[in-house]
Length: 372
Image (cartoon, rainbow, N blue to C red; front, side):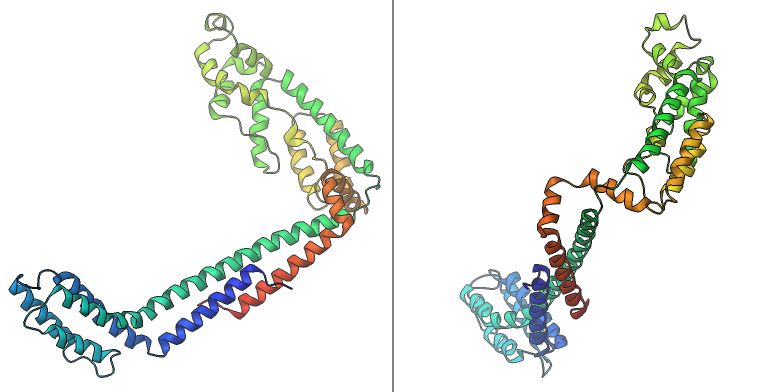
């Protein structure tokens, strides 16, 4: 089995980090840091005085440069890496006269020191790449978790009995949906707008009921103006009137146009959809919760017969065959022809096995290579 790319990348990053760590430990991290301080300061001095302390340039700068180099390299620790190189460089620069070529030569003398202290940067880079590789592996594991969940669900749907009598669930749900749709349509058509919107507002107490809350300005308007006693279709009709015509029908044409005319889309879209049962229906665990929330709202605008139809839907969750029938309904609704072909050919099983193997390999790698 080929290793997942995320594992290969993590193993490579771990190897690179180990090599970089070994190169640093061969000298000593503290010793390298001390060496880097001297190296960096010498580099800065060379860059700062190049051109000023050469030839017939500024004699004061020349003396200052030699003094700072001498001070820096004086009394270096005996065990400092490249101590001899620093002292040789100091001897070389303590000439009676320096040229631009001397500065170039000094940089060449320092080059091996730069390579040595560069091991610290290599280790920092290797550590960063290791962390990125570990993060990428963790992210890939999460993706595989989702992929496995999807494939397992697809396989479960493929095992569903497509010939199961799903009408035992569908018929009661359709009876309720038809009844509640008709009841809400009548409610919206014939009930004062203020009462309709009051029911919608109170539905906010039930998160499973997806009515959009009435806009505050609209709610205030229907409560405070006589026009709020009119049903919603009448309000929408008024909203289409011209200003001069509207003055004959309402006490405050400006208020109506401000509160209603700008919310026509909201009012026109109010329907029973938020209290209808989806098809395929929710799980046996979820269905009673939906029915309980819907009943609290539906009872405010529908007759007892509609509530009774909802109780019949609630009772479906207690059937021993509910989940079997529901799985069949979900499979019929969601399985595409391509997915059915993949299931029949065994491709889904192969993909699932590969995903599980990859996830296991990544989990092993993450355990093998812990966070730094």
